[in-house]
Image (cartoon, rainbow, N blue to C red; front, side, top):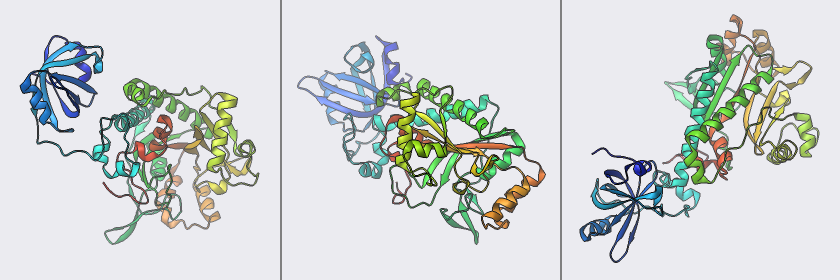
Length: 428
């Protein structure tokens, strides 16, 4: 008899079926026992009235893996509107040790550090697993949207010879006796691959050795990167980013509807044209001093409130950041060379995406590095490609965990990360 999932049970009323999963909860009454079995799709209620079946249920411990053969009957009060009667229950392994917290409760009562210490078990809770389903659907939507626009998926090295951002926030390692680093981003490689495919994207880990201990930062996170050639300027990149976000959210709604319902979340609309403000204007809106070189978290929150109030949008672009706050490969605004053809996208008052137009001429790279006092040699393999013809191009990077946390209303990115790596955590 083929195993079926809990969500398939309504199609089998009157039939004898086989389900399998984990013991989620037991309720032992005088003459009947209720067994809730959890599988990848949801919950199934098993009712045992026969003394032998009831005794078998009584011996089980929560999280024990079991197989149940039973008859499906309608019951509107049961999960999915059906339940299983006259069961034969067979453990598929030894009795499970009790988890360190109750997984059957509507919400985990353990602290987040305790949940993370016991992540393999905590992630079984429907709220935690639902967030990961949303994450998976978001990645699927990212890929599908860009595939439809003739982007090519690439896979770039995560061990590199120099830091991408010319900073100290890199993890150093020994590469057969030579210094190397974990990649801060696929930035250099995705630009070089524009010279091959014109439009490329990557889904992969990036590493930042920044000693942040906040609810929005991880030392390793998943970056959704895209780069495209033959752009007029950064506004062409913003259009692609807008369409990508819309595709991601549409896929989340389509593929992870049950997970969204579990989390009590609805997908926000993406405006056909996301409101955009220049950095200097953003400072004024946020009430920040005009000489601020960057936006602080409080400024981002103020801009998020402004976008909702003035435009009914959960998203807002901030363009034209000062060149001093952007990487050396950023293209300046021709009309205002002190400012960049770059942007950030804020989602619900939090910076989610950084992007912009890049330099594409060899001599521009030499000048940019010289202006920052950077030697050319560490970047030779990257910069040399621009001697051989590169089109005007640009791109963006979305932090997956930050996107999902903002979407589902999680207070901490670690709540939507299976096994987070940060300043303090290397296990499990």
